[in-house]
Image (cartoon, rainbow, N blue to C red; front, side, top):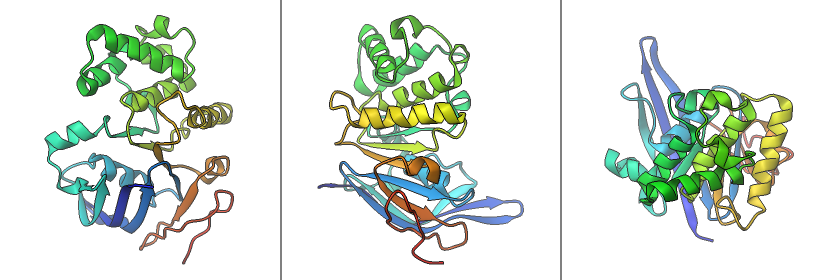
Amino acid sequence: MTMLLEVRDLVVRFDTDDGTVHAVNGISYSLQQGESLAIVGESGSGKSVSALALMGLLPRPQARVEGGTIHFNGRDLLTQSEQEWRRTRGREIAMVYQDPMTSLNPALSVGKQLSQVVRHHLKLSKSAARERAAELLSLVGIPNPRGRLDDYPHQFSGGQRQRVLIALALSCDPALLIADEPTTALDVTIQAQMIELVKGLGNSSACPWCGSRTISASSPASSTRSQSCTAATWWKKPPCTVCTTSPSTPTPSGS
């Protein structure tokens, strides 16, 4: 299989009034086409920060990548200009965020938000983009998808908003999909539905989220145990420990 993503010795720091925060300390991992990786770790171990680094979305100027490399499809993402990042985000690498209420724009309809993404990256016409938006809502299980295109985020339930975020991430058929604890803000029942949705999409050859795609997931261990994937366990104390385990028993390779 072709190597899609290779992270080597990634170090991320935050400068604060109280000193330097060592957020990510020399983590390394790689993903091939078709692989899935679940990153499991305690709060504050750097899961979300490392995901933001992959997307080029670290808050500036407080955060900085102090060391390491991120190679995606053979090119070093850390050397990209902001214009190159705009072409990469959403089109080649997409992300499902933790909280849909803070990730979706409350002033724009769901259909508008989906259409904007595909029009920008795929250069679709307005009518074709709206058709694509309806297809995406249908894909993630939103009832009456065409009738919901003009609805706003607050008119959807919590589980439906999370499905909309998944639809946004899938909209341009990315090669790498990062899911940053996408079920954290949901109750247990809805969490189970989201996991089944992901598994169902992964088993469907008719959808963008198929076996040829790679998913990098920052997830709690309870969710990881229900997935079929490689697990990496991170610990908060430096350096971060990354190991490969079975999904059911993620364990560290050191102390």
